[in-house]
Each structure stands twice: as structure tokens, then as C-alpha cells.
Length: 264
Image (cartoon, rainbow, N blue to C red; front, side, top):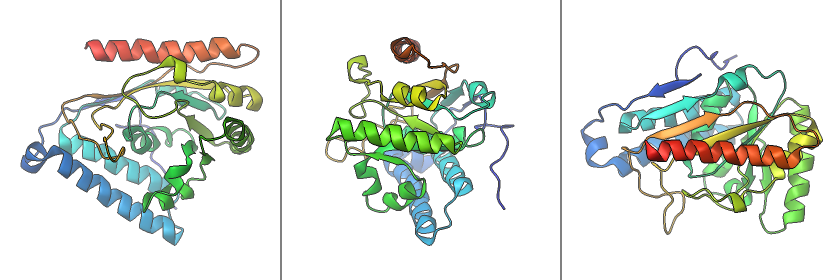
């Protein structure tokens, strides 16, 4: 049986990868070559998921291939705060900002060496051609983003069940992906779930605008290999009767990190 490697080398723990010198085609046609590499990975993963053989290890491997796509494009990727995942003795709710498609592909290789994990995703991802097979195989919590009450119930009920089975959850509590972080659109659903399940919250700050959102097709924007990618996890936050304080702490963590990265 294949097992996910222990966090001994990048990107299994804190690391800074690149920037590397891209090859001729990556330098000349960065967007086309990047998407070609990602598409190959998704096609293989989808085929395996349809066959029923796409497990946690294969998900980790697919994510690693996307890390390699960033590397071959010459993009610098910085990963910090993984010691907070390593020290946990329970599942957790990871709450982060949602900037682009990149985090959905990059996070599995970073988190799964430490903890089993799945995502809270919008309905469209489990209906998306080809990729839907991959996403469904990960047993995500699906929300429609039409009825807030139904979404809350789905997250609280489904989340509590998965957390009880030692599966952590990644939640992006924004209305949509955006390169601009708006605290006003950052809801408290993740904190509510953590409180109900009795597990800690892990803040997650992301800067992944190297993979931009498209104007017509949101998942396929232009790729900018010279924009560094940053992913940083914060210290676990216990949730008891301090929901608002934890929510504000997550927002503060994200805002401080984004300010640092944007001013670098």
C-alpha cells in the first residue's frame, strides 16, 4: 500500500522553492505550458477517480505534480507554519482567504502528510467536466451558495461527521475567489463548525495570484510566473465561547500576511 511521505523534504514542511530558471517553452509561453502540465495531471486523476482507485496517496501525488508545474514555470513558492499542523493531536478546521484556483491544487500535498483532509466546495466543482470525478472522490462538503441556511446546515452536519472521523476541513468563507481580501465578505461558518465539533481553527493566509481568475472562464486566467506564491498556516485557535474573537484573529492573520507579501 502506498503511503504519503513523512514531512522530511520540500514541500512536505516549511520551505521556499525557487525561483528557478524556466525552460524555453515555459519562458516563451508561460500560460499555455503551465495549463498543459496541469491538464495532464487532472486528466490522469480523473481517469483514476472514475476507476475508483484515486485515494489519498494519489491525491497527494497529483498535488505534487501541480507544485512541479509551478516550479518548472520558474515561480517561487513559499510554505510556512506547517509545524502547527504537525503538532496537532486532533482534526481541525483550516480557514483561509480564497484568491485563485491554485490553492485547491496546492494544499493537498502540503496538508496530507500531516492530516487527512477534504474541502468545503461550491456545487459547481462536483459538476465540472472531468474535474468532478476527482472532487467527488474526496468526499467534500458541497454548498450551493443560494440558500445560506441550507449551506450552514450542510457544513455543520457534514463537517461534524468528517471531523469525528478524524478528517480535517479546509473552508474558504468568502462569496467568491478574489485577489482582494474583503473582511466584510468573510463569514463565520468555519468558526461555528469548529465550535460545534470541539476542534481548533487553523488560520491560513494565501497569496496565489500567479494563477489569475479569468474574465470569461474564471478557472483559466493568465499565469504570471514572476509572482511569488505564499501559503502560511497560523497557530491553532481553540473555540469555546469566543467565536467573534477567533473570527477576528483569523482575519487579522490574513491581513497582516497579505500586507507583508504585497509590500515585499
